Length: 126
Length: 126
DNA sequence: CCGTATCCTAGGAGATACTG
DNA sequence: CAGTATCTCCTAGGATACGG
Image (cartoon, rainbow over all chains, first blue to last red; front, side, top):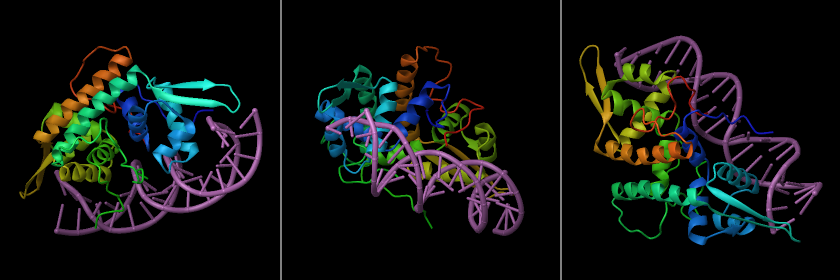
């Protein structure tokens, strides 16, 4: 049963709500840089995120068609996540936002591509 | 005294946290379309936002240099808010996000410019 | 290994009333 | 008019333990 998460009739609103969630852009950043990852590896890469929240974010991103879920019913099971084409497009737009933010901050050191929400080690945002 | 709002060392993260706040992008949209507005007019334009939250968002946007605050100590006082140059830039990037969202949703009706977060009448997102 | 099921709590948002 | 000052409520998220 899906939660109380209200949905908007506005596409932009819906997309922002999705990105707004905790860890979300950071997850996208990891997936972009480290390529497709298994659940556990992804969790370790993100850091202190709980399985509960990670699963939630992944489901929402998948529903939006931004990432794909590759399930292999082996023993033990193997589930990988990666960016879809939409995920790539989104990454590009977010890069624009990142550029802007960095420019405003007086930083022009493009260490990595794609927005890095929580720099490794930083807490999410509550 | 500023609140417990933790700040990030990552520019992108900080910007996202700001945009993420309730009503924020909608406020920007209103300011872009209706030009500079006085506090009361802005509040009425946005809809059901409380003065408390509106003030909070405006302060944060101002701190980020995205909007400006024009205070006239007349009687009664007159305070107007409008987009700064940064605000315009930001609007353009957000437009990109809006385009993407609309395209994915199969909508290509560009009714208005700038992302419209909560379509007039919709609740915020909390 | 990859998740779900529960419990719990912090703090963000609404409403209301009040000031310069 | 343009905000602050409180108070309360409620949900999103962390921690933990268990299931396929």
